[in-house]
Length: 354
Ligand SMILES: *[C@@H]1O[C@H](CO)[C@@H](O)[C@H](O)[C@H]1NC(C)=O
Ligand SMILES: *[C@@H]1O[C@H](CO)[C@@H](O)[C@H](O)[C@H]1NC(C)=O
Image (cartoon, rainbow, N blue to C red):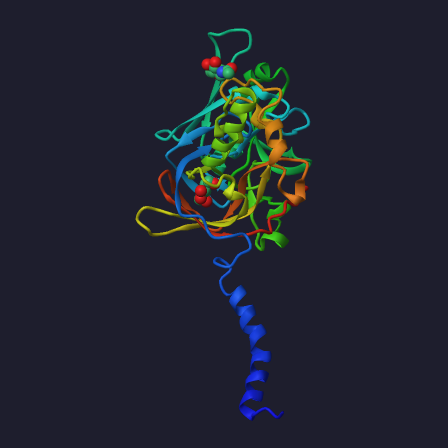
């Protein structure tokens, strides 16, 4: 039977266009048609945390400047061994969390304190400019490389006139080093932040990997119900040392595992800031340390996390909590700002190596 010209035309047209239309339909809006599911509802920033010295006690702030390298005053300082200049962290010495830093905005000064060994009356203490000028640095510090994860990066070393009392705290000779957030020799991101993966040059000061760590409260709540059942304990989100904490509702914990792009918007609605999520944050034993007492729990939360949070194919031997990000824009972040996930993905995969 001969088909009419019109029918023939229709068959040819649909054979030709149907796959194209189907393709367009499924790829048209990656945000609505994503294997990773629909976008979560907007929420808000509930806390901002900075940790001026790597691995030392953090400070909760109401607002913070976001720089290309991360939050201003976050992990721009670091303790290193002497004479090797290797980074020191809670991983080797949980007592480092007893070193506290306070910031005085009036004088733009950071004061660093620690309990002195073998006494309860004495405190070790020194103060330094929080935003040292190049002149101040060239007359008060020396340049020397510092080693972090087997890689060297340039740094400014403070005089032992200031820091020598802290040798007693560490029980060995140490140095304090500083990495300016704007440096001629930036510490370029590796892993999922490397240029060929991220698509642009980005750097940070002394975080392990990326400029920012974002955490969702409801995931810690869910973890705490497990810890309560296992050992009758609960832990504070600060153990995970995040920078930005957002509120969640308790219905779908660990929603952040699939976040890809984030948008933070001031209450005024003007000047939003975009963050690119590079990867999930794979954890070590640091969250076992209570940041207020430096006591290290023998098992938790590590054992519990290992049971159900080894979820990243790229790093199956470690549990994940929180999402690592690189800012696309800079600006001022404040508690209460609107926080939106604008893109989700099912393609996160951790690239190991620093
Ligand atoms: C759990 O811990 C709380 C507070 O530390 C204590 O009051 C309570 O008796 C404990 N419950 C059990 C079942 O051990
Ligand atoms: C945080 O987690 C909760 C529970 O999983 C979820 O409902 C909420 O949407 C999450 N927040 C964001 C910004 O996705």
